[in-house]
Image (cartoon, rainbow over all chains, first blue to last red; front, side, top):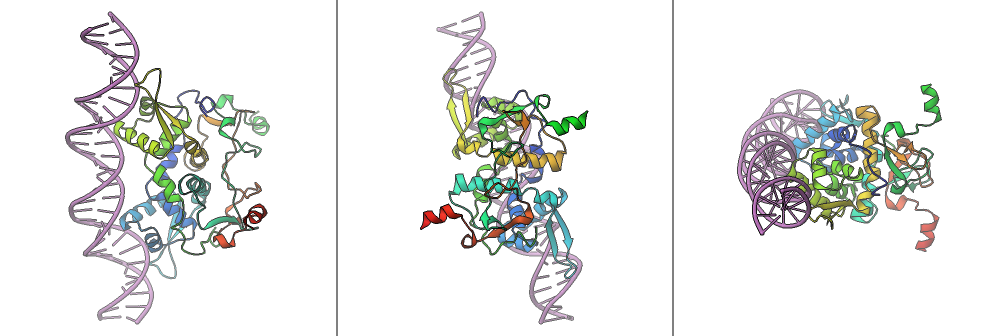
Length: 163
Length: 163
DNA sequence: TTATTCAGTTGCGAATTACTACTTAAATGC
DNA sequence: GCATTTAAGTAGTAATTCGCAACTGAATAA
């Protein structure tokens, strides 16, 4: 990796990773997100499932709502009950969550986690979350390079659009 | 997503996500990892680049070393200098880091981050980090299902191996 | 009307984080 | 050889966050 993955200059400032971490970097955020992906919707469900302190849970849910990752609506049938639902923005974190989970399976626990996420069409497990080229080829770290925008080829379509 | 991505039973306990978060869930871990991916190797480099407090940086680097994500070696040329290097385990976090970064670009900052990670072969940016089926088809949340191990089809090769 | 449930909030001690200054050991300059 | 600089941390302390338990308030159930 070293020598291939090398940064041309100090451009670390303009990266979206800090912004992403501001929304998702706190201690329980990913666990709450996973519970939401698994179909939990209510405060008490999250609380009993995760064993998280109530004030922390309230704080995290509020923060996720503020960041547009969850919506918060009182249920019509029972207006005490608050329904937390993933937004499109929240759902878009699925690849991140799965990549982290797959890494944990491979390098930490050493065995596949349950439940397994499968393709509903054939009930086969999803493939590994990989880095791929624009055409879908899987790339390894040796195929990769950090480049400044002016050295990047954005492809014909985008170039024509810019003309 | 709701109704498709539904968990059959309470199996949240046996998931590798908590294990992954134990290694990488702390406040500065992903930023340090990103700096390492971008070619930084020394304490003072991380410190001045990230602006992190020195004791926290020392603690995080030590933790990442303990978890086998970085190695720590004194350089032969100048034995004051400690060389921090990503291990294979640490490099394996690249898809996770990129997925999070791409999410931040799309949903938080709204513009592509610099530097750009490109395929060295053609200098085109990498594609989006997606969830894919075993055969490489991109899957959306509507194609996915959480399943218990006994309902999963692990494919012919694995089944033959188990006979 | 009284009890129970849901979704929080409050108070408080413990743990973690951040800021600044100090240390230690190796290399460099003179 | 001796003083200086540099790299990589420690130490002390203030601020913040975390976690537990008990409490509140509104809505529903008995």
